Image (cartoon, rainbow, N blue to C red; front, side, top):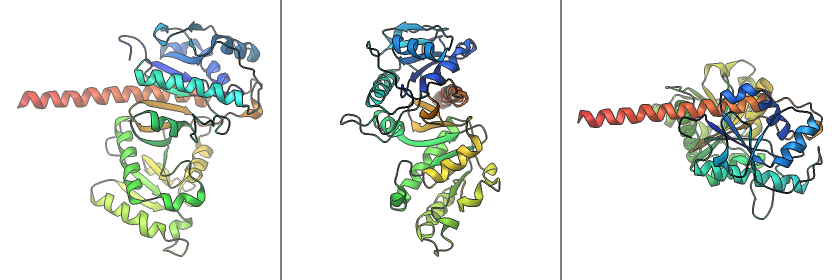
Length: 348
């Protein structure tokens, strides 16, 4: 973080033909946001000007050619490209994917160098970003390769946190992908994130079953009995507060989730459908487990409303605040643990 400066929030602009730019501009149209952080958007002056004029959003920006020139109190735009990409709102074009990746790669480069403190990513389209050089199912997988740590897709609000045991895996491959080793890794990542990123000292975690009714004692699949239950028992024996497996169909409807600090879902839709139903518009997609902080809104490109000025920026705004809170928690945790180590050395 810049000495005595505000936290620098790097922002990748996402698919130019989606609502990414709109939610970014709407978030920082409120100048009070600059009291909390310094936004650094990776795009170009021409692209931002094009978008804000089309959407009739009133915002002044500070165009810079290098991240180091970004100023506190300003909406900073780093010029990643000089040309003016063609906008085709609502369409998944090759060009839209190309510039989404250019923005993301430059933002991640700056994050790795410490030129920005956190990264908030606007939505991309998983199809039009694919090239020979960039072949990832989404942000999480790309960041897992570029950054250090064990990544976990963690959907979060103040009251609900859902992690995924498997994320971008086809349903037919889910049961084979779930192993004792994977369960232990994901539980460790969630526990550490809850402690370090959210300040929860003794986190309680619920695990959802793989099969309907958690397999009904082997009648509907054996994976819950042969993999999940033994893994949970072993974790409990080691002192971890892990419970389950719970039948996913009734878990959220009965408010059972409110008893836990986080839920670990077996696969993508099992976790994201209830999360988005309960929290849509306020939820944040956080990539836990990495050495850098990255968040994003809980929605996609929303092509159907792109360019119409109808996009709700609530989730993107929450993503910014979540990134700031997590970064501060990490800094506080680092300071506390460093002080403990210093005291121990003095005591000796």
